[in-house]
Amino acid sequence: MINFLPLIYQDELLFSVICRYKQMCGMVSKRALELDLFQIHNRMGRKSVLFPQNLITFVANLPPNSKLSVQEIILNHTMYPIYTAFLSNEKSDSVFKSMAEGIGKSIENMVGMSGSKVKSNNYLKYCPLCFKEDMEQLGESYWRRLPQVPCAFYCPKHHVLYKNSNVLITDSRVDYLCADEDTCNTDLAVDVYPNQFKELNLKYIENASYLLFHNQKRRELSFIIKFYIDKLRERGLASKGGSLYINKLLEAFLHFYPSDYLKLMQSSIDIEKKANWLRLFVRNNNKNRSPLRHLLFLQFLNVGVEELFESNKVIGKQTIVVNRTPSYSIEERRKEWLKLIEENPGANRSELKRIGKGLHTWIYTHDRRWYDEVTPSAKTRKKKAETIDWEKRDEECLALVKGAVKKLYQKQGKPVRIIPGNIRREIGVKRWFFNKKLLKTQQYLKEVTEDIKSYRVRKIKWAIDEMIKNGERLTVYKVQLKAGFSGGNQEIKREIEIILEQVSKEIK
Image 1 (cartoon, helix red, strand yellow):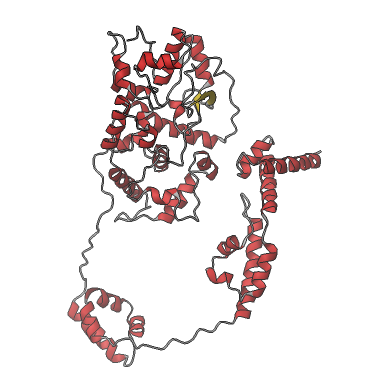
Image 2 (cartoon, rainbow, N blue to C red):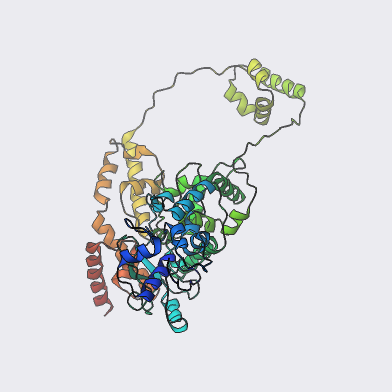
């Protein structure tokens, strides 16, 4: 049993409490510390920075007058509330039990972090202004939970960027290091993101905060999917029956979130891929979904996360029954149809449909069996072999391609690469566009196809022009971000440096 435990601050990670305890006691050995707290000889007690285990043992080792419970630790001092919010009660209880009893399972696996494409940060994060205030008011600081939410970039109190400390989350061998001058500082990070990104991210953090501090309810995935379908139906993005208008949904989602912001949030969408995450997100399957993407989707729907967990009734998909009452007498309509057949001897069904128009539709809908009995059957005609003048089509197609290439080069916004696929989409034709018989067209496509290096240069120059127009400061990193390139490509960085030098000379 230990003699004392430091005062626990609001939103403080249990890991942080242990760090401060270790510092106060002047303990050097991490193994001795874990034995002191968890009474475990052969393995670590905490197992994870974000999801500590063996908490029953930990609480049992606290001083007799301590009122700290296992439930309070898990709900208020770990990342459990946000990572289990969108799991069923059964799965959430299983995670809770594993943290309390320390049964050896990886909590990261249980909550779906390990297999997710949305990765947590590698280092503990902090707000430099919160750190400064803590040091002035408390004489010490601590590791908070909110900055550790995936893709939380801004402090909601000070509206400045969170920063990485030098304390690793992912390394199980990491020591218990406090949030102090050795691991943190008060220097503000340079904010390179547009104001729109900041506003979107602060709203995202607001919803994440509700999950951390206020929500203890859990919802089955089937309930959540029905809730989403109801909200999509209200916005005209799903039918009355609940079928999704997936292309409209994709278009609306990408209009709401800039593609660069989605990339930043580890949730990029390639509309050409049928298996992009948004297409699969609102389908009923048992795959884990990252809480980040739930929050992104709720924000897109303009729905506070609280509404989802406070709702008690959802509809989802439903069968729509339409009872149509004929506005005409069946006998009257039958007479009209028979008269039409009599006045047009030899006419087939298609011709009668064209002549009768609304009458045909009415009879076909309300009196189908009688219609089939009295209406002449369609004569089966031998299809004529299709004859295509490929030379003529080649000339027509070549003209379309030249026009499309011109439009693509003149398009506003981020440049589009000149390749056959993008040219075909610009024209709006089907796969016959690539037929080998279109000799001139295929030759022209080879000539105008843009190699990747030329396309990169064009994107870089576009990004620089846009930044100059907007009065933005030109740096390699900012140009790289504007053009949409990943940060680790050294070849692109060198290319940007060369072009920036050229631009600088031209300006002078």
